[in-house]
View (tube, rainbow, N blue to C red):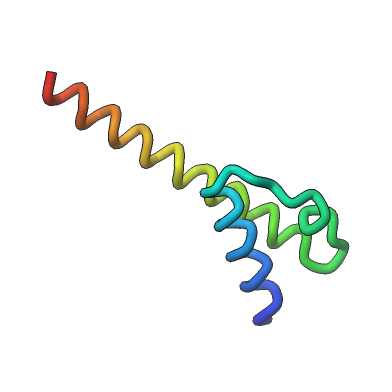
Length: 60
């Protein structure tokens, strides 16, 4: 189970940094966990940008 969490966290970190590792994503054992983590990381960035836009709009 630790390997699944590690793959997820690697994907999440890569998603936040906007750099996808195709090798990890295609890994037959842990690629799914990596891809889910990657998408969660990208969603986190999207939500951060949305929150920043909302704050900026409220201050105008």
